[in-house]
Length: 489
Image (cartoon, rainbow, N blue to C red; front, side, top):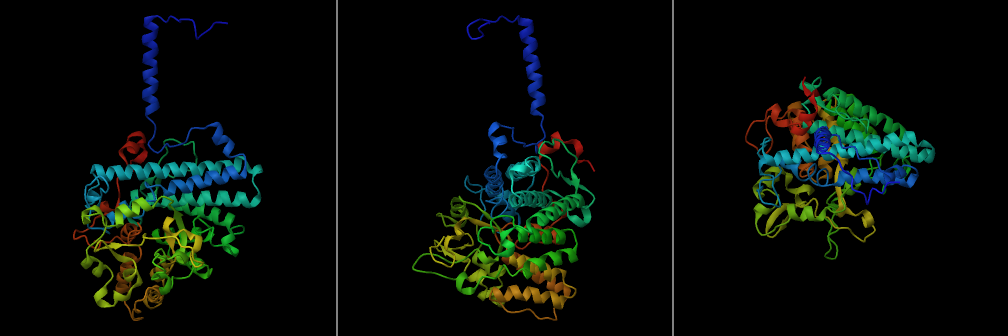
């Protein structure tokens, strides 16, 4: 046998040149992969992952971990980029630590915004690929899973796929009523797919609802949250989280009866309760145990284990206000309507607080507590995904009459410490009141920009320039357009 380690192999120069040329061509074509093609390469470790229930659970935890990353809900799709789009902050700069100035200006051609949208797009499809891998393997390796584990794993993976695609649609797709039949984004169902034709806006909604239907059917009989256990399921896309997401999607697509039915199911479960004023404003022995996240209202929340550095960078005084994310005292007074009854709003009293002599949003100034009330809930490690108040806002918006709708809105207002609105309210005034509630409730959470888009708002609070449909549609990343020629409508 020839020893390839010790023998010198002579390759003629012409053949060497030819070989290099072939390798270069292969390299070029290998590089021309679709931007969203983020399928992880198969490895022995990955294949072994799907040979046991613990392996499947580890894979699912990995998907939630991707959601928690700063490119997604650990920052950009919650308190950071999308909140800046909604004009939540005025103190934006171009420092190395915080760069959201061009985002606030809605300068979508800027390198700043392109960097954010590229990372959101690629990270979202990476998480979708990971969810698809679980979906694929629950079918291929069904025999290693118990019935309950199969339902839980497949159900959550399907729901996460819908959740991620829907937020991509809300960011990169056209507004629904005008763009239902226009191509929007690829809806990836197969981990091995490459360049696929983008689905229309209506089809993305249809596919997401189909995923949620299968997920709900799988989880309803087995999810502990249905019968008893809430604690370990709030940070998973559980059965009620799926129904709440269904309500959100159906409202987005104009299906008001469907949205109301799903929201009513969540509220009617009795699993979720509004925060008490005592919990919202609690201080004990010098340790902050205040429930600023309104834990018992969370239908789905995302655990971000390393959230503290982001919170400290954004929402704490660091020597100069232009180094943080906040608004002026006058702006906060306007937001919470403090001169017209809003001064008692617990969202203002207990979640707009001073640090270094300046006001900051303190929603994420959370500390875990050793008390029995919020004990091991690790409130300092969570970002809201879907909360109870949104279900009431959906019912208010979809009610048959303004008088009925304002009743749902008043339920939230009462629990926030502000007075009821009159039952004689007009439809126009009810819409304005719902908008004000979204502005207060979802401050620094990433939902407000998408609400403005859905209602086709011509103005955003604190932005004195009219909005156009183009302002509500973030550009598809150039790399995606370059390698996928299927976007032409």
